[in-house]
Amino acid sequence: MPTSIDLFAKVSGHERAEMLRAAREADLLPFFRTVESPAMPVVEMEGAPRIMLASNNYLGLTGDERVMRGAEDALHRYGTGLTGSRLMNGTTPLHLQLEAELADWMGTDDALVFTTGHQANVGTLGTLLDAKDTVIVDSADHASILDGVQLSKAKMRPFRHSRLDKLERALQRAALDGGGVLVVVDGVFSMEGDVAPLVDVVELCERHGARLMVDEAHGAGVLGARGAGACELLGVEERVDLRMGTFSKSLAACGGFIAGSAEVIDYLRFSSRAFLFTASGVPAALGAALAALRIIRSEEGPALLAKALENASYLREGLTSLGFLTLAGEPVRVAGQDAPRSVITPIVPVVVGDDWKAGLLWRALYDRGVFTNCALHPAVPPGGALLRTSVMATHDRATLDRALDAFAHVKREFEAEHGPLPAPGEH
Ligand SMILES: Cc1ncc(COP(=O)(O)O)c(C=O)c1O
Image 1 (cartoon, helix red, strand yellow):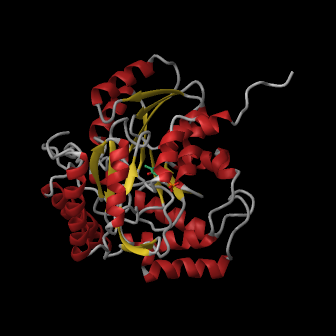
Image 2 (tube, helix red, strand yellow):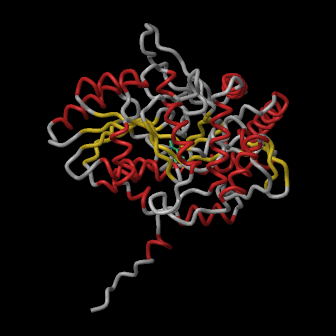
């Protein structure tokens, strides 16, 4: 008998369809906007220059001559694509060099390069965990972590964002589940820009015999004296079992990696389906990532990282003094130090709350020449819509001032029409 349910019914009837249609009609959709120039502090978008406050290009290296030359050299040496998986015919000396330098940077035995950061998470978690294991995740962890967990069929125990009491309870329960236990947290949370309380997380994992993996997508290339990420900054590198990173942010390219012990990485090398059954990343991406990594690790690295964080402080202070509510993480402990410290990251989220209002505010800024990212549920909790702004080391003060002027102007007009936006101290 033929089925009476049309598989495609969900396509037109999903919960967001109406909102999406209305947003399209009003030209308020903040997504899939076309960028017509290289990723720089000011980009050409849809026929006009816009100040880019929505990029993960934290060090601004996508336009760096040396990084472009790294891509070009790799392109000329290895061609446009490798047309095969790393296992069969897609491993080049460039991969091996990059893996060696990544492992050295992370201070681990070994590292494995994947085609994307998403695949690094899916391919690590989907392989190391199985249905008998338990994985404990922070509720704000990145989607690719959750995708890997789902693939593994492990029992998932989520805990409320950065709530250590909830993490401890999850660890106690997980101990009774009967399998291996892994905790996975983002080092820097991608939307809110706050840092995980890694010293406490490490201590809890050690006390309860759980393994720990930290996603350093937004921390690597930004935090720590070597730029190795949140684990380095907070002094827990040696106590974290696995560190994941991506090339799509500070490393100015596309790809991802997992770093850890030789035994675990080699296991992944021969067992991870998201690694084995997909084509290698294009040589140009690997060449660019290697060149960017070398800049981060060179003498000029620390100043570049510091510039990105200085710009973030400047933008945050500017937005707060204009009366916007920006999110800042709670101070976190650093291993061996008594007082917790506040950590600045390049991500400066502006809280709006309501989805539709966030779209309106986004559009008003866009029209004034500032491009931000609009983060709506499920990227943030329901009712927690925000404009995610982020800076690059290459933004100059004049450009940031122009962006702040646009925010000031838009706020006045927006509040006159739609009522007050959340203000500092309201969160
Ligand atoms: C925290 C986090 N992890 C993983 C990823 C996936 O990385 P990629 O975009 O390189 O696939 C991202 C990027 O969106 C991210 O923000």
